[in-house]
Structure formats: structure tokens, C-alpha cells
Figure 1 (tube, rainbow, N blue to C red):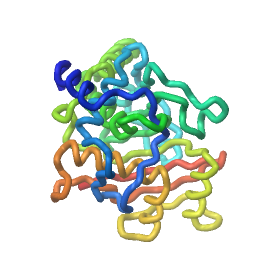
Figure 2: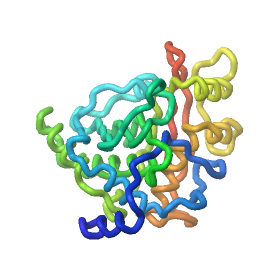
Figure 3: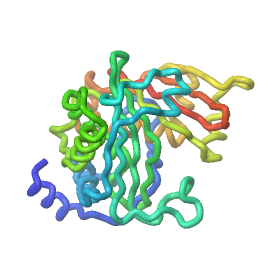
Length: 279
């Protein structure tokens, strides 16, 4: 997307200063493309996100060396030059005055996630994704922008020093992402890290059999359907739907979907989730 086309898009659809915590909705199921009534097409939302993140000082990328979600699931960490920590905050971001980690912010958005790959495949770890109620983009656009830039980095950063990795990753985040820049695949697995809100914990706890702290599920079983009634299930499904829309996969056999995953309860009582993505 060129600078001129982005400016034209912003003039057409506007750039609100307020958004909300991601609470995607729609029909159940990990592979059903969802276009909610009244929501702008995915390319426009991606443009809205680019406009909201106009301040380069609010973006930082670097190599990542740890992840609670990956560790809990026993998934080895990709190498330091193949796993990126990407943190973006809109200039107007203001967290909730009394419940900063469990309620919608006053304004703006904050998106902090990890992206990596190795011989076992590619991964994303969603850590902090907050937005206030009236924003025209969602966390899906933040995720797809960050994932697109991480994929572009993977071949460029092998063998680089920590300082070089930070410079390259931060610069990548400042690049605009249009539909043509989105890679052909989503990560093989998307993890949701340290889910600690009481409502979310209660919903996930009901999915685990009594006395168990881990559960695997597959497309077609009862647990699979129940996962997509949760906030985290809905918002992860929305990432897949947005990707399919951007790649024009909606309604054909090349659409990506969530094929299964896992739930883990750690020693602190928090939950880690894994969503596996396939065609």
C-alpha cells in the first residue's frame, strides 16, 4: 500500500482515536470466514491500523528468548534470530484507570506479541492485545501486520547481533502492510499466553475435566466447539477469517481454518492456549 493510497483511505474511512479490548463475535467454528454487519472490509481495517500507528517512537521490535506459553506446552523456542518480540502502541493509548489488565483502555490500542519459526514450523504467541471500543481496526489487523513483517525478516536476520536484530525488527514494524504484503500462510500454531482474567479462567476451567490441567482438542469434537464460545477462541478465529479475506480465500478450498489445539493450566492457575492452523 503506497503512502498516497493510505492517505486516501484515511480520508475516506477516518481514523478514530478510541477502540476496545478484542471481543470478536460471529458463528462458531475455526474455519468459518466471518464478516460482521457494519464492519469495514479487511483491507480498509488494515489501512486504519497503519494510520493509527503513525508514530514510529511507539513501535519496538527485538529478538525474543522466552515464552511462558511455549514452555508450558513443551514447544522448543526458535533461535534468537528467528523469534521476534513486536510491541506497538498507538500515540493516544490510555489504559483503564482502575483495571488496566482486565478492562478496555480509555483510548487507543496496545499490541505485544511474539513471532517465530524453526524446523518444527512457525508460531505466534499473543501476549497483550488491548483496544478501546470505537476503533475501526481490530487486533486481527495488528496481528497480520506484525506477522507479515516478521516473515519478511526471517531470511534477513540469520546470524545478526542483538543490536542489529533490534534495529531491523523495529524498522520492519514501521513499514506499512497492505494486502499484497501479507504472506501466503498464517503461523502453524497461534498461542494465547497467560490468560488470567476471572471470566476467561472460569470459561476455560469448565472445558477441562476435573483433576486435569491439560487437554487436546480436534476439529469436530465437542471441546472444539466450546473453545470458540470463549473470547480468546472468537478473537483467534477472527484472525484466521481476516487473513482469508485479505488473501481472497473466503468461500473456497484454499481457506485456512483452526484444525485443533490445546489448553494448559499452569502452576499459577493461569491458562495457556494453542490453536493449530491448517488448510
